[in-house]
Length: 246
Image 1 (cartoon, rainbow, N blue to C red):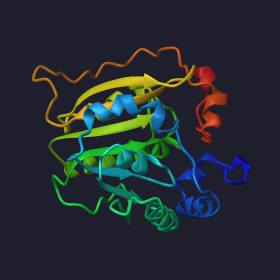
Image 2: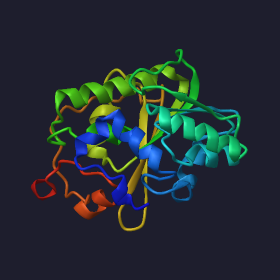
Image 3: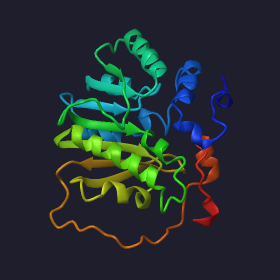
Image 4: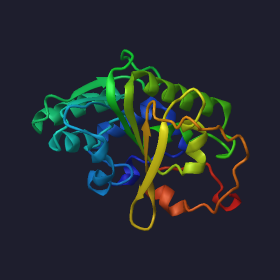
């Protein structure tokens, strides 16, 4: 099966649950933003074998299996697609990872109590919320609402000193306004990985924001954008962003 068999015809299809059900029915495995080996060294310092971990939007990724093999066994995965959940459960059982829990759930309505997890991790899941966001410097109100709803849910289910790990190609000048919103107490750092084209690993530590942190409401200067159109399409995304204008 070629990637063309599952690629959407419009970016907005990524927001349609039926698209994902159809895709996961046909597709056995796909890794957004490289596989685990490319960023393992960037996240393992923030994980230990006793952590309870929540993965948002597991799809058909092997991330949870790789974490399990690295000794992190208390893992819960969620996905909005019932097809993805069913197939993931079967695959994990077949591969000897029966302790990993897989639930059908919406990342905008996390069905967990407060302070439930030591670590929440997502890889490419939050990016879906930006596919129809309009101007990346001034996203649509609906995009802002959904992203903030997701982040507020993550903050709620994280334990007091928990860690949120976000793996994305969203650059810091686009992510910072969300991650550094005043309702959060996260410290924020990021590192990059990838060959030529860089992806980002954001590590946000709850309750670790510096006491002298001040919100910066000044308009950010537009840097040169390194997201080339062929790279975006290579990840199967079709963001409605005119790169030449940025």
